[in-house]
Length: 293
Image 1 (cartoon, rainbow, N blue to C red):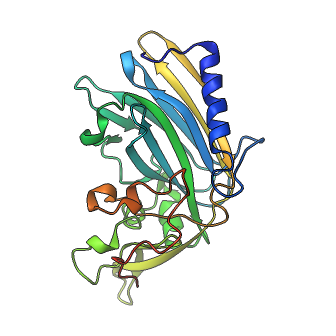
Image 2: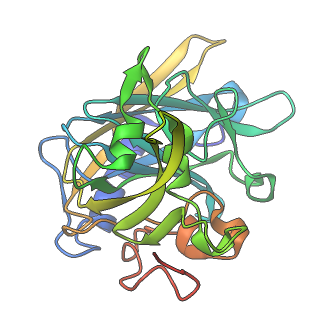
Image 3: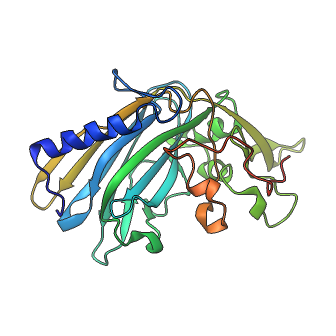
């Protein structure tokens, strides 16, 4: 690895992260019980055959929308991010590695819904951001929770079918940018930081199952995430890891749902770049391009 992983190096990095981010947003503080709504993993690497794993636990009885972001070490730029939509008491593990072609991707064997959806268990880092991203750090941010477990997103994300979520495609639809809809009548996507529209199956009077647009309203997810990490070289049989630095009350009692499905490719950075550590989500609506309901 390029990084010089001395015994005190990681401890210093964790201390720096704690000092740098505690209190950045409102009254956020470093957790003393290992739980929070923001987790900071101070280092990841895919250099020299190493890979980095992330383990997230939703310790609550609420469905949680969690953003996982990889920032490259060369300039702290957002190199890859996606949402993990975790049902109550769900666990998710992903592993970042570099393949023989030099491509960086996260793989997971979990069936938990993501946005965008993983293809064949993988989500590839966009090539335009992968240069210099072999090392960096990771943010895990709680974006909010449906206000009820009967809300459409919670219903579709719950593991009920052979241990798999009911319908991850319906979950993913909630994180579209409404402004990019192909037809004006398609309302799927993010309305604002506390509201999305997706599909929920509806049975007609004749027994036909149809797609029905349905609203999900979100609230602050609370300090319920537990995050850990590990760095592994399977060929050499080496592994190390630790708990992430957990921050509490980052969200300041408000949901922070943003566009994720198209993100930066839509030209709307409110999806790809938010929430961020410099001030959370924009305080206003998601933008004038939103048509709303």
